[in-house]
Image (tube, rainbow, N blue to C red; front, side, top):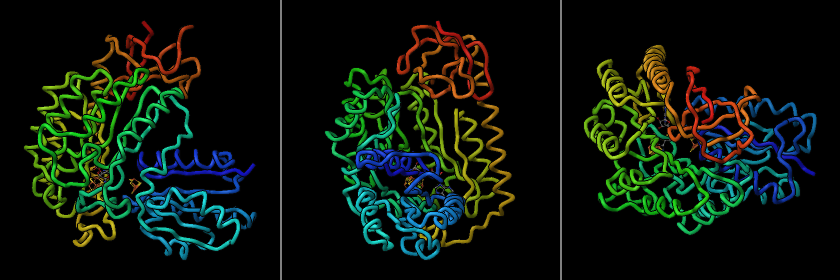
Length: 442
Ligand code: SAH
Ligand code: SF4
Ligand code: F3S
């Protein structure tokens, strides 16, 4: 049996694509291996969002030259966002590659592999195609947690961002297809589903870049339909652009006991001047109002966010506004990125003016704020009883099990005889481990 190895870089959308492609490969008779040296096919699903992401993948792929030397029949393919951005150039830069498959052509993976086997010619496919919308619905992973891509592409064109260029225009899948995929996953044991899109709350809006009226949200309607699947216990989603979070959607989440009360609300910056330069359609004030609206409607709400430090022209005052807003909101989790100019994105037309040392300093300040918040939040939970979705034996200690709270906090506990993955259990928290919690089953 031929063996395929897949390495994934970048976001959850890429993870999801790799999982669907692994399912296609298995269906076609391949097995999946995590040992490069024993694979007949090496696949790299890449990311372009920051320069570092590209460098990392290129380094790794370059290193595969020696495997190709040992085994000239080895097939090596690069897929995903960097493949889309670079196309043929990648074949020139890395001559040991056999093919390059862009984001619009992922559904053609098996075809391309067959063609390479037959003809041994190099191919780069980067045409956009809506077929990826319907063609990538398989699931290789069989875990109690699964992911579904509900939209693809992005129409927002934030000035720093390469995603709209490498993922193409925003498209929404048919609701019926999504529900069918969810039912199928649940019938195979999934109990938690994470819905994915670059701007998930724009689901069903036909690419319109104006946020919907307060009472209109096809995304909320989709959530409501998913909730009716009896065995499905939890629904999460990422990421919603703040201005698409309207009353209709907030109400749906507030009244649901399946949709997790943990929301990722990308901020990027707390300075109106920088937000404007980023082409983000909200202000410090309107972001705060959105948070206040969410917090007052949804009890136990926790929030996470993405922030960029060192955007061109970001002054100490701009940065202070970001830091202040983050501390006021009290994000439970934040992903902080140092600005990286991306070729083709609007912001790359102006100099990357903030020195690396300043980016690093600002990054560290926000990370320190975050870790203080996490430590005190976890400490405050000691003594309380939480509901966790039991996931299985802990990776670090096989005498323990792990689960997650609705708010996505990892909890370790000793199992009892009745423990079963994919069930909700009550755990009394006995101590904090700094980044996760320990407790006892009730
Ligand atoms: N669609 C998602 C974000 C996808 S990219 C959303 O809008 O929420 C994930 C994160 O990477 C972004 O939220 C942003 O914080 C960061 N990012 C994107 N482009 C970047 C760049 N050029 N430099 C640094 N960080 C960037
Ligand atoms: Fe990039 Fe903005 Fe689209 Fe997110 S919403 S993918 S940051 S352009
Ligand atoms: Fe994701 Fe990176 Fe592409 S963040 S959409 S894999 S550029």
